[in-house]
Length: 182
Image (cartoon, rainbow, N blue to C red; front, side, top):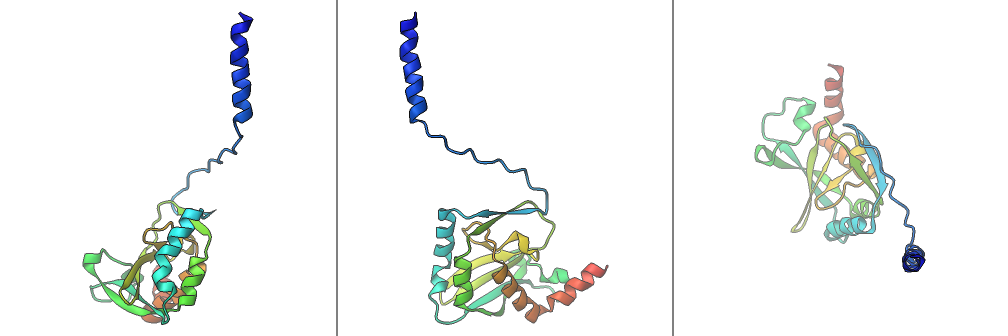
């Protein structure tokens, strides 16, 4: 009887010796609505980000930024600056950003994971020559910059730059202040 257990014992010892102990991923608690967490980007995520931005990184001229604005009359409210469904909006030029800003974005290494939010999303499109790249942001910087085909990326500098373009074009901050006062 002992002879029948010896091969099983040796086999289990051999398997244990060959098995490498990989650290188990830590399970993170679920995010509540409006919460965000920041994680290091994987190599694959960084590759996708750089690939998406590649046509704009080699541009010698600033990249044009268009905002999807509502077609309805501007009623001077903050809500007017929220992008509608594409069928209800029109692309409006709000300015340009330099290729240097996009190089900085391509070097970002932190992704953003966030839960449902009641905040307002703004849709943009980067344009340079025949290249177009849809992106979106939320006024809350924590939710990152969403770039088509990529994981949301934490980029406070690009977020601020887009916000400045919106501010210049639509006087966003004063609109936001009016909404908050109510």
